[in-house]
Image (cartoon, rainbow, N blue to C red; front, side, top):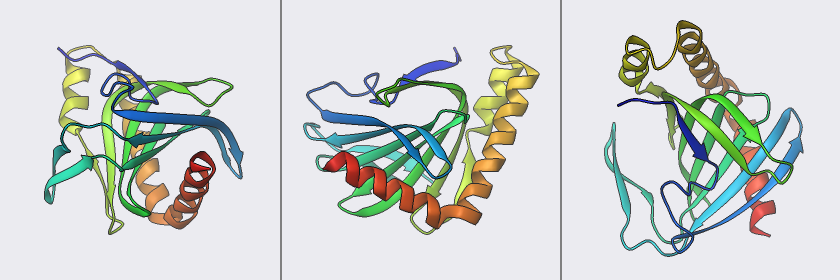
Length: 179
């Protein structure tokens, strides 16, 4: 059964404290204000693999890091995945809302639709079928459906027009949280 899921920036719903470390802080940098969190995977029993348009992709293994940005006034959360210093994927959850604490930790409410941008710079919307199903089943209303579609388009635009600035911010936040 579909539902709008409440998720945590530290991904405690997926990984426990023995599998990862988590640091966060509240960021005001240029046009961004919100929470930044850094997950470092340290105790995974095996790599986590997912299906991607290019085949199987390892998204988490020991030593990998995820830098997450949750804008205070935005309806998305960006998870940027690193192997060493190399970004290999951005995964963007479109959200109903984000709740950011003064420490930078965050809770967000996932609206089914996602955007994935690979290392080559190609961004695409995924899970449109889940969004439509949630709407048809009455899990979300027309306004929330339209919000998800609009925000996903804005995120595509962000990656096509401002990817370099975004990645500069992401790397800066990661460096601060790694310090």
